[in-house]
Amino acid sequence: MIEAAIIGLGWWGKNIVNAVQGKSERLRFVRGVALDCNRLHDFAATHALILSSDIRDALADPKVRLVVIATPHSLHPAQVIAAAQAGKAVFCEKPLALIRADAERMVEACRRAGVPLGLGANKRLWPSMRELASVVKSDQLGEILHIEGHYSNENSRSLFAGWRALPSEAPGGPMTGAALHVLDAFVHLMGPVRRVQTQLVSRRPMPDPLDALSVLLEFANGASGLLGSMRATPFYWRVHVFGTAGSAEALGETELVLRGAGGPLRRLTYPPVDSLRAELDAFAEAVEDKTAPAIPLEQMLDTVGAFEAIVKSLEASQRQPM
Image (cartoon, rainbow, N blue to C red):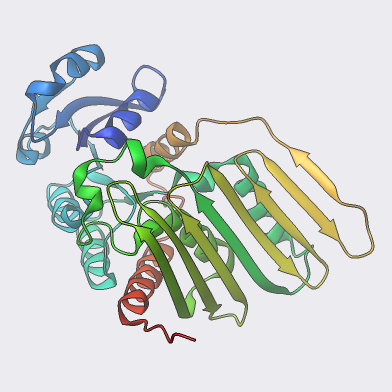
């Protein structure tokens, strides 16, 4: 059992602790770090956490072998680097960083310290997405030509802390909170992104946004992509890969639709899993067994690079009225 510290105990940090504590056979949180410890005494007592407002307390604890980062996005680079320099395995929630240069510094710090770096991308562990990746890898779709994805949810209307409304922490409308999961799936399935074109239509700003993001992508392998996301409509997830011999479409967490040339449509459903606990268990196992984490460092960097390009494209875009 690996003992860990959670840095950041807001909405998502609490979700992480609730997914793991007393349920995982590989990981146990013993420390928590938050700016306002007073409001967390009951939560800490329930989960047997030692609270502190200073990350240095957790990094100095010899019992702590693994650090999970769930703080505002701009803090990730310095905190990941500090954890690596303290010799701790480090798991960082997405986005790893807001720009590729920072992500490269984080990756290099972990390499130099000889500690593994994990990334919070729990949608990869959804049964539908695991099966989609298996289908794409099997070549049964033929030559891959195109990918489409959409992720919308209403989290920003009720669950997000104030810092998530800041353009400095969450640029690109729904890109940082929701669409980044789809972008991660795209890089996982298709490889690096070569070029992007973007559009963000905003009818109402935060804290109760009405906006819609559209992104066209070209991948290094020659395939094309289309990504969409909204923050004011009920949950919807779709990632659809098209090839010369057929297509495969992940719908939600547990459904996969297969279409083959000249064949009948097949709709497959899989049992649900706790993807948050699954990704943390997998990282703890990699730490214990000294094996490579599930998400390659190159994919982490490629996703941050594509994310940065999308944000820059949105900032530079100009509309031509009819």
